[in-house]
Each structure stands twice: as structure tokens, then as C-alpha cells.
Length: 509
Image (cartoon, rainbow, N blue to C red; front, side, top):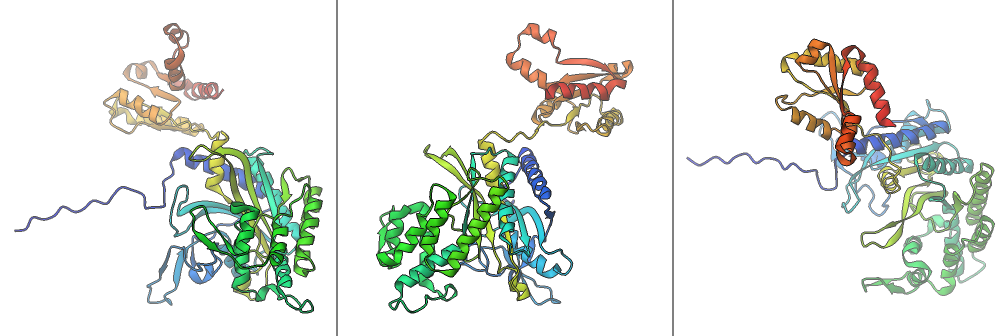
């Protein structure tokens, strides 16, 4: 008879690209999201919790990586014989679900509809250092308003949010650009390419792969600089690895509007906008974009948001196939060290812009919309580096068990503490070793242990062990100090709540 194989145990490990979050991390994220929600609520935005699952059809072709529409998501096909075999997917962001929600419920929602949403999103992409397949986002959007005042408001709210969670003014900047200006630059390139100056430039919507390559090259400005972009717009260049990258093939004259655009940031808003106006030339759409940036700058200045907080910056290029107007990005400017110890700035923690075409997929009618998304995990990492995560990680008061037959008495003690608003628990492990109970309390970061044996029960008292003081004394105090500041003392059972509250207050100070 063949020997039966033992059943193989599953591996106790998280799937690749995912991670677990424990108490302090969850508490810190919860506190930060509560703070952000408070700012959003103050601005008049309402909370929305949409489904974590959408149809792939509803998600559409608006993934951030537009070269891979409907890819990069966790999807499956329904097998219910009563449905049509729809493909479903976990949401990859919080904006695509908003478009579906507004289209579905638009007759019952106010217009403009101002909503914020917070929660996990999932992307089926190759994980890497600091890049997970599940992560949190925190969004705020205004749907139904084409007024650039809505875009300016989002930027102001973003600045206020960063300061509310603990990022000092001067440690961040919100940078603004406009996709219409980019379109104007493309038209200026085409005008330079047109053999007959009397012929009108090709409209942006008619551009093909040639112009798409120009946009991709613009997006590399931060990495390769002006000289690198010139090479990529022309014949090409060698990258850091020595590989040759083919260029777009523009002449110097054709490339000039792009270079003028990328280098148009001046010493102040006025000079930047003047430079952008020159870069777009006579392009109507480009000039409209510059005018919108001017209007946003005026609105923000009127609200007290100067260039120390929000600035016009042509280098901001986001979601080239996604946004239709103003785009913005929040960058943390303080210095950190990379894995090789080299100084660098922390980088972007939030971004967004105007996306007037997203709801149109459902309704057939253009519905203007603008919004921002905060990368929760990156912002938490930044706050950790700045030492701004002050979430209280103190554990519960632990009621120890001296006699397992008296669990009802211990439950009465812990219930009295909880009813008074004090976090508390009874030790539920094996009570045989009192040392293990105190070790458990230390692992829980408990501030106090309560002890009641037979003698204390007969006397109507409790022993209170100050675990916070005990840890400090063990590190710093002499034996004389132990007697002067007792770590453990006796209190009347009837004074339980008042004495524990007083001790917790003393510890917190």
C-alpha cells in the first residue's frame, strides 16, 4: 500500500506586491485621513464610498498608463448563468468610479457635485521597492463645473491639507500647469512644420503618433534636462546605460516651441505667463490655457495663496491622455537621502487636474470635472521622516488574573473602566505565570497593570502597577528613587476609576 503524502501546508506569506498593516500604522493612517476629511468637509465636500468592484467596461480606457487600456487591473469574468458574463475588476483609482456614480445618480445629485473619497485601490502591476499592488488614495473632486475657480479651490484645499497634517509651509509647493498650453505648443510645432504658412495648423485632435512622441519627450524633461530633450526631439541620444534612443526627428526650428515651453518658468508669475504666451504663439487653445492660468493665479492670490505655497510651473506634465485643462501636483521639497546616501528632495505626494471627458463616456454629454488625489502611503512616509506622526500608541490597561475562578470579578473591574471611557482588557492567556502576564502587558505597550489577589479582595483594595514609570526607572533611576517614587501602590477598590484616570493623566504629561 502506497504511503499517503501529508497534505501540503499553505505558506504563511503575503502575496507578492501586498503587505500587512499593524496597529500603530493603521492608527496613524486613520488619524491622518480624519484630519484630511476635516479639511475637505470645511470646504463643503461630502463623503462618498463607492463600490470596490466596477465593470471593466465602466473603468474604460482611462487607466493612468494609457498605452495599456484595460490592463493592469485585477479582473475576472462573472459565471452566473443569469447574467451576461460581464468582466469585473477591482477599482484602480477613485476617479473612474466617481464618473460612473455621477452618471448613474446625476438626477438625484446636486450640480456641481463636490465629493471626497478615501480607500484602497488595486493595480495589477509589477511590484517594486515601495511600489505595492494595493495602496490607499484620498481624493476630492468637483463634478459639473467648468469654472477654473473650481480648479483653484482644489489647489488651495490641497495646500491647506498638507499643512493640516503636519507639512510646514516651505516644505511643500503646489505646482500648476494647463494641458491647453501643451496643446498650443503642439500647434506651434505644427505651424513651424507647415510648408505653406498660409495653411492653418492641424487641429490637436487630429494629431497622430508623431505628436504623441513629442508629449512623451516633454514628460522626460525632469529626468534628462533641456539638453536631453533637445536630443530626443531631434535625432536621439545615448541614455545612461549606453543604449541609443531614437529621437522624434524635429528640426531645431520645429523643436523651439517645445524648448521655449519647458524653459518658460520665470522669477514670478507675470514673467512665467508672458513666456508661455510666447511659446504658444498664435495658438487659440494655447492662449486660452495661459488665460486660465492667469485667472487661477489671481483667484489664489486673492485667497492669500502666494508663490511660497502655489506656483505656476510649466514642467508639470500629468496624464497626457487624461487631463483636458489645468493640472497640478504637490511636491514636498525637503531633503532626504536615497539608498546610496545621496541627498534628494522627497518628491510628489499628490496630483490631479481637470478631466472634462470622463463622465461623457456614460452620458454622451461633456460634464466638466476637476479633482486631486493624495498618495496616502507616500504622505505617511513623509510625515514619518519629518517626525510628525504623533499618534498615541499606548495600549490598554491590563487587568491581571490571580485566580482563574474569579474571572467574573476581573470582568467587573474591566467593565467599570471601559464604561468610564478607559481602554482596558482582562488577560485571557494562561494565568499560571504572573511574569508572562506582565510580559504581555509590555508587548501591548500597556500603561498600567491592575492586580487583585485574595488578600486585596479581602481588604477591598487593588494593586496598581505603573508600567510607564517602571520602564523609565529601570533605565535611569537609582535604588533610592525606587522607594521615593513607587512603581506599584495600593488603592481602594471603590476609587478605581478616579485613581486610574489621574494616573493616566499624569503619564500623558
